Image (cartoon, rainbow, N blue to C red; front, side):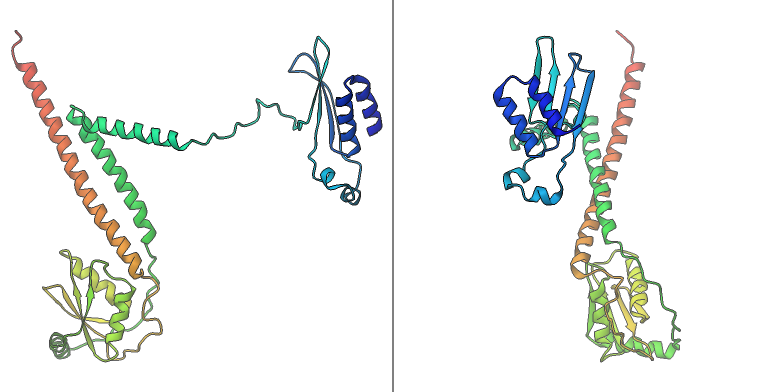
Length: 321
């Protein structure tokens, strides 16, 4: 069926002259012209035809700009009891408007502020509740959510340890250890290990000291009980030094070794930078305090339940008036 035949059929049904001119313009501009005849029953479509453009790309490019940039239109014919109705300018994708997905409505700034205000009032109501159980449970839930968030943050700073290279550890006699221990104690140079812990800069400083000295002191402050041994093992793995002595004031003396060769990369790749080490320390401190606070709230909740059970027991045992 040609476009002229379709235009003749539509023009015979259309009585309005302006509507007829619009349909003819659409056909002459070679748009994707669609006709749909819909019965009075909305669920029943009697007939539908769709004709694609018959011109090639070169012919379309020769058209004027307003014709080439025009969108495909459609003519919808509805058969009602009163007569025939036409709808021009809508694209027919085969789906009704009710079936299309509704666009997500963006909340205004005022609506967001009202929502935040609602949640704040709700939280304030729980904090000022006369029931102590409600207050403790609210604070406990908030602390546990913060603990989960901190654990997720700390996972970003986990660095995979590189495969340990095989090397022969040097054996030292007791006399050599005593001599190196006295030498390390007398010298004033040292490498600090602060709140950031062991990171790439600490190992770099150790190698820089080993350029001119056989031994180096590593001062760990602040340091928790038992953490000094963890620092010693980690620095031994990263620097390949030998631990000579661990002092009670959290000082470790390292020996570089007889066959020491300065590595090309003095800061190991499987360590954190100075900035990231500080961020990790802050999250660890916050997690430690949050865990202590959760433990305290759980103890308070247990005490409240014990007191409540004791009060109910005394109330049941007391004689009724």
